[in-house]
Length: 270
Image (cartoon, rainbow, N blue to C red):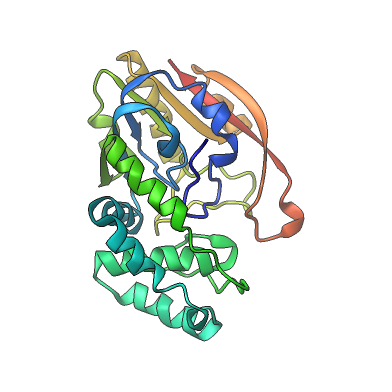
């Protein structure tokens, strides 16, 4: 049975795991430069894993689960109370998150914010402040089983969580690695762009660099699989890769009418 991520995530890959996993070759080390909700990591088979992301709060959350297990999970759970599920309390805790310098508190509050915020978005402003409004959920779900599953995964395979840019990840690749990339997608329109979940913008130059780094890794015998929207731009970006196309149902959108099927692709360098 597939393990589910404990975080809500825009563009999360749990629902299309079957499409991704069948394209991933056997790996000595599985590498993800864009960790996101870790849906793929939770379900891969490998001797070890390197899981990276530019969002330090996300990586600290994963590190604290790995290092402290049940104690940290209980710490996270104490934020999930009826008293904390109000608009006023949500904004108080969001302010605490933005002001805190404790990686443990920021990690736990990131989980709280993710489960209580509008559409479960993780988004920061240009100054690095979490800025998603209150979600008004009747009874936010505390993902106890999913957190335990994540902790167990970190014990099953040797896993390193590291905060860095994807360029750094690619510079550290070695033979035996298999890389899966789920970057911020090329926007479908000017109003549909969502590229700042870590407080920085993933620009056109970044998309091009990622494609170039992927092709360079492939030329050294390291397979790379990438997800993105199926657009004329991505078709050009991945012109040298094998491309597989499919539609994906959207489940996180500001406009409920826009939660339809979106054309996506897998670019396969192997």
